[in-house]
Length: 148
Image (cartoon, rainbow, N blue to C red; front, side, top):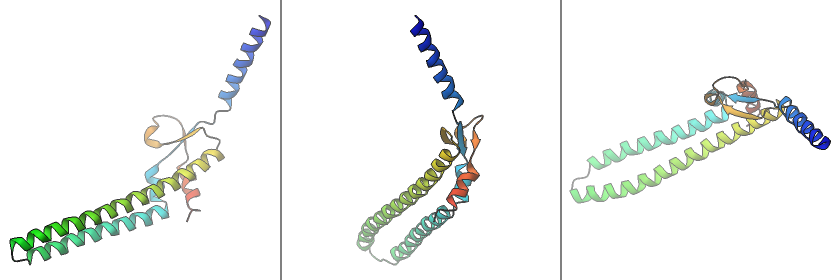
């Protein structure tokens, strides 16, 4: 019985010590981080330029289509253009996804570093926090300014 009481007291002390050492939850405003992250801005410009390039491609193909004189030429042109556009669209989506993932990974790495420095238990997006937490947005932005 004496050992049982001692064991329960030890467990209770460990539980309270764990609570006392909890660092809390940090949160970031992801949109603000992206707006202040030069790498993300460059990636966005690159993806936007590719999108404009695709729009111009469609405008050029529409002009070319209008210049064709027979239904057979128009049909063949449509098929070639559809295949070519699909390949361009796939390349655009691959680039967009790659750049988004690169930005996300860099933000996540910076958030992890701040989490460790601030001894936090977790970092969330601000949209997931209703009340409480510690805003570490500016700390993450500062970390990202060191990233090239």
